[in-house]
Length: 298
Ligand SMILES: Nc1nc2c(c(=O)[nH]1)N[C@H]1C(S)=C(S)[C@@H](COP(=O)(O)O)O[C@H]1N2
Ligand SMILES: [Mo]
Image (cartoon, rainbow, N blue to C red; front, top):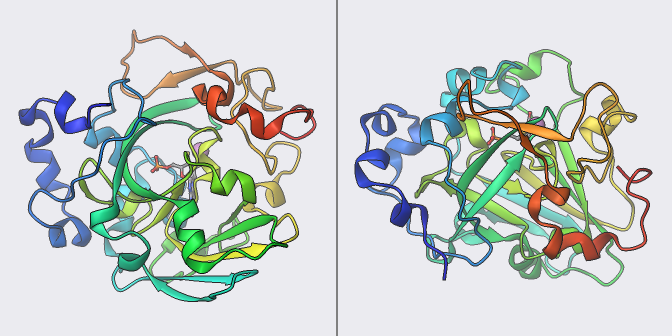
């Protein structure tokens, strides 16, 4: 039995003033001390990054490309009501409310490492539900092989979308077996609170053994398909970003090494740490890629 973050973090730390000052609409609407997640054997016992770090050092290009842009500009995103279209090769296509896909009573805490392709990393105590259960609600048809995900497209609310850096909306995809893997979750919270907008509210994917860009934020559509779906980063720069994007210290990005990473918050003298195969989740996921050439399928 693993401990939840609140069992390993001193009260004074997580109840600190800055948590309350973080003040997005979603946070303000959250129940007093938020959500209780069931602890999970899938959690790491590494120390989580602080709430401050997790919510002020973000990649969310819909709100700008700077690390502090999402914290600065995502506050006005209207995250409720919010529904996710689940369509394609499913028995029960439709529009599903976030509260039905991830009811508070079903939330699990998953303390996961997050490794960005840019070679920094964090440890984040997510709250969420296994994607497998969500897909089961919709009823995956036998011919389905892939799952495609899409983020909201709304330049009015997402000022970063007025720049054509990406062919919006942001898209991602997984093979069906990756999507069904118990480590793969849809997160609706972190640190026992409703997900802050800058982290992908109200619902985002988290796939901890893949580079962070696979963990698509603010999802509005999930489509089951029999063909590998196009993804934003692959479309932008296919030599640099592959469909699989499994964390792999042996396969460098064409412009930098992936052998080591900088843990955000480790400080000037924290040094770099070695990047682990599949971001440290090899025991659980290596079998998904048995026999595949991971240099070819990067
Ligand atoms: N829609 C969308 N999802 C996204 C991104 C983005 O720009 N837009 N950035 C990705 C990248 S590169 C990373 S590292 C993670 C960062 O998640 P975090 O800000 O919650 O740590 O979100 C991913 N999901
Ligand atoms: Mo990233």
